[in-house]
Structure formats: C-alpha cells, structure tokens
Amino acid sequence: MTLQEKPQLTQLGHHVEQPATPAEAILETFANPHPNRNYVVRLTAPEFTSLCPVTGQPDFACIIVDYVPQNSLVESKSFKLFLGSFRNWRTFQEDCTVYIHNRLQEATQPQFLRVVALWYARGGITIDVTIQSGALPPQCTPLPLGRTAYRGGRD
Image (tube, rainbow, N blue to C red; front, side, top):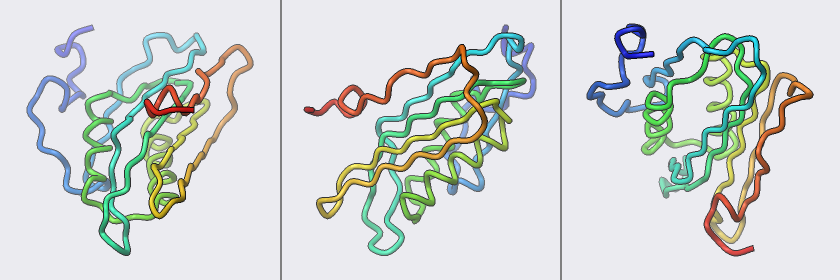
C-alpha cells in the first residue's frame, strides 16, 4: 500500500509540527489489512517524558502498548507525535498512563489493549502502571514484559 492509497494519513510522509499538548495530537489510523486474523501489535517507546504537575521536573518512562486490532491500526508516526506532546505536559504518572490508553482505545477500538508504563525512579520509588481493556484472544500471546530488556539496565 502506498501513501496515495491512504489519503486519510496526513502526518506520515509530511513535515508535521510537534503538537503542544496531548489533546491537540491526532492519532491517525489505517485499515487493518488482516481483519480476519488475530495478532498482537506491540509499540514500545523507551524514552517517554512528561512533567511532574507539582515540581515541573521531568518524569521518564518506557511505554509499552500491546493491542489486538479489529478494523484499524494506529499509524506509528502519529503515535510518536502523540507521545512527544507529553514532553511539556504536567500530569501525574498514573493519569498519563490511563490517558494514553483511553486515546488509543478511542482511536482504534481494538479487541484487546494493554498500556504499561514503566516509570523511572524519582525520590527512590518507581511507579509502574498497567491498564488493559478487552479480551485477549486465546491464540494471541503478547511478548513478555521483561523489564531488563526494555530499560537496558541490570536485573
């Protein structure tokens, strides 16, 4: 498939300014080329940042999204721009994680959606947040959530 066949994609292949806020970000989707097959899609963003709503200090996380599409998939450039829009947004880590889930749910209406945010330690405490919706089809197995593999650190 080419961009010419996908006129609804306005960001892929074009210069697009970084959205100022997550609410301004547009999550674009495209038709699932295999709607009769169940499969798991994983999106991983190991360098996610947002701001603490109290101190304004940056919070860093690895965001892992697993979903089983129905009729549409999220376009990865729009997803990247969406995540980048959090860079100057003040929010608590839990709220941020749920917001990402809700926007992806709204945009793609997947059979199954899990968003995991592995937040790096601040003040000596890590906060890891998981939210999931829908049912994982029995024949689908998401990749393991091995913390070491995604953070590049030690066990």
